[in-house]
Image (cartoon, rainbow, N blue to C red; front, side):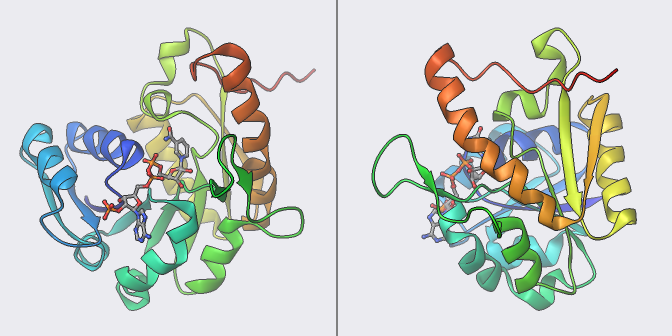
Amino acid sequence: MKIGILGTGMVGQAIGGKLVELGHEVKMGSRSAGNEKAVAWVQQAGSGASEGSFADAATFGEMVFHCALGTAALEILEAAGHDNLKGKILVDLTNPLDFSKGMPPSLFVFGTDSLGERIQAAIPETKVVKTLNTIANPIMINPQSLGQDHDVFVSGNDPEAKAQVTNLLKEGFGWSNVVDLGDISTSRGTEAYLLMWLRLWQAFGDTNFNIKIVRQ
Ligand SMILES: NC(=O)c1ccc[n+]([C@@H]2O[C@H](COP(=O)([O-])OP(=O)(O)OC[C@H]3O[C@@H](n4cnc5c(N)ncnc54)[C@H](OP(=O)(O)O)[C@@H]3O)[C@@H](O)[C@H]2O)c1
């Protein structure tokens, strides 16, 4: 499949690299084609990897991953071109983190709203599926690294889109527990969890942890 990645950071590189490894053609997009980080990623990811602008990546992808800075998430979708995303699945990994007052960051969306909902509202003809935003990037693509079962969540309005993303998470990335939380408004919970995730990071001194849901 042809897949577009919006974002050149750790998440874009990790997800993009895994997708290339799985045999997909992946175009990484950034503010301008020829971005230093994207070019370096293409060189090491190998055949199947390419780079361009946000619009190039959105046009190229049959499915597109949003892996960029939360505060710029909507602006980036405009640069990607809403029409270029029409009818496609947008996998949203962003978090609404506000670093303006230093560490730890706060949330700029909270309670009765979420960045996932804002993204879905901005591109109503695109099927947004929020997932993996609760997990550090090395674990996203290698869940076995924690040595036991743990959970990842999906939120989105389109059941078929969630099923397709769930399949990729399971068959491609190796997740065994994928919890469908419901519509895109359930992003409120997974985004708000970041407040706790950041404190767990401070408490443990590393990001090698995740949520495990225990039920009777
Ligand atoms: N790091 C993790 O392990 C992790 C885990 C879960 C979720 N997340 C979420 O995933 C997203 C990506 O995280 P990250 O750490 O990989 O990268 P990041 O530093 O949050 O974002 C990097 C990307 O954002 C773009 N960007 C930055 N400022 C911009 C602006 N003003 N306008 C347009 N684009 C801008 C950069 O573009 P240029 O390349 O053009 O500079 C780059 O492609 C974030 O929303 C984060 O909260 C991260």
